[in-house]
Length: 266
Ligand SMILES: [Mn+2]
Image (cartoon, rainbow, N blue to C red; front, top):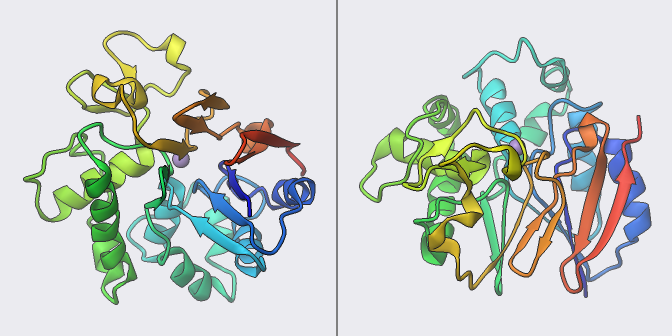
């Protein structure tokens, strides 16, 4: 059995099909998706349909654009500047797709590997990663998910504190899992800097370079950061290689770090 982790797809359905042909997964293999399945690229709906139709086990964690789609579907925000989301919302099977998306977790842990979309606040340990993902998921899966997601929108709090409550707590959880790149040494998330780590000005550091994460017992697999690009380290695997920006889509076989790539296909 092999597990293939795949970076941000952003509606690039044809690129995903071509990548899957290269991987050629078989019966017991698993496909792990880093989230941001939707928005920006050619067809969000076709991506969701394709992944749902796969005959092998798939794991998807939610990304910030997946949350954006859910918020648009709940009429909690206007996707007026996102033609891809607008066309998704006109699809006749959009409700089934939305229901499937909101069943997906924010973090997936298997053995010593953690799959998230963007990263974590360094204050989180393995127990909090699992339980905080579950806190949000439970609400997303509930019948009152539309109300829940309407309260999730916002950049703040951009830090973690165990005492946060209610919508502030949920916003911090979602911001940590789905939007983090650079943080300050006191673990505050910075939203404006999206470049490569070498371009960032002090005191900003990548979340995974924080001293609390210096001795990682777990391996993080994540996407979200196209300017970081492919990063393969013993405890870090970053897979967003900017397919939708004219880059390529990347998969990594977790057992041996074999890399598969596919150029954007229009
Ligand atoms: Mn993202």
